[in-house]
Image (cartoon, rainbow, N blue to C red; front, side):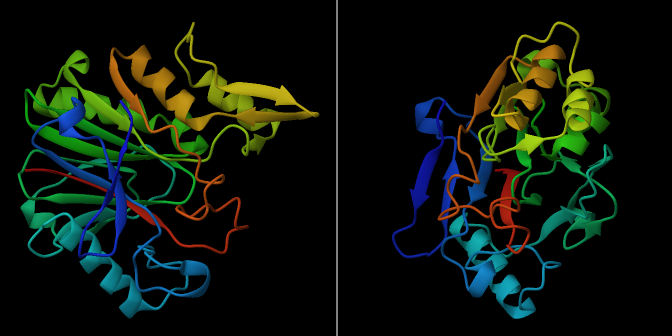
Length: 266
């Protein structure tokens, strides 16, 4: 199922979602916001949601306001983690609004109106929705997170804490750096391959012009399929190919902002 590009008639942010009209998840409020339509300038132009990259704090706050206005959310009482490329998953609720959860790379909630916000600039946004148990999650998966097991850890949390069944989950794999831009060393490639289920059928690597290239989104899908998730929806958008719409840490040599992925129960 492809992503739908959303341009609001009066509000400035440009964002993407999996459309309910095309068979997407009903009752699941979500958006993956591009870099377009914000208040930041220079390397952070313009919808930067990263507060630790050197951008003006007032501009970042205004960008958050615009994001949640675009979603029709009354306010911006989001919950967000300090992302460290690890495997810690936090279950959050209304009491955690406006909090930054330390050393965490996935958030889960079953409370309506609690917005989960994570930030990206090449790593993979992974959005989860269980329509049966009414629970949502967002995970941050770079190569280190894939090796650490953040994707299966998120599914395990959904199963153990909320009674989810992997076969009931809808998962959206958002824009991230594509395999044609992500050259890695053999040690990184081997670590990711070792983190995949045995016999994984999804190809995650290619070799050309003397270099190894890694497909992060495919590695995420391989881990999901390996633990029984069938409904995996790939965005198919490379952030490094499209820096006109997305922040890319690698393509922009580190001097860039962060785009946001937001999910909550209606």
